[in-house]
Length: 78
Image 1 (cartoon, rainbow, N blue to C red):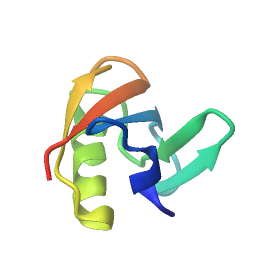
Image 2: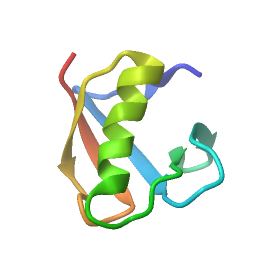
Image 3: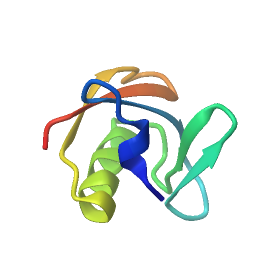
Image 4: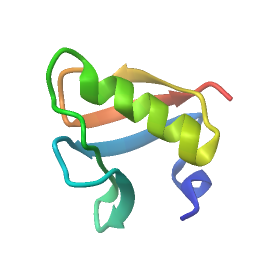
């Protein structure tokens, strides 16, 4: 999947679905959807999101907004 096409002004919008059976990034009609195995508690899903983009796409990201929401805006740092 070409994540670069979704990056606008070093920002990436992602909808996160925690507590999924496997970690994967998909496209749907509204944009990117990231399924994570981590639960949405004690920042575990947010940390898993950051690790996922580093491991799968070699992107260093930081959560700009949506730390307590499923709809997140990420800043691309590298």
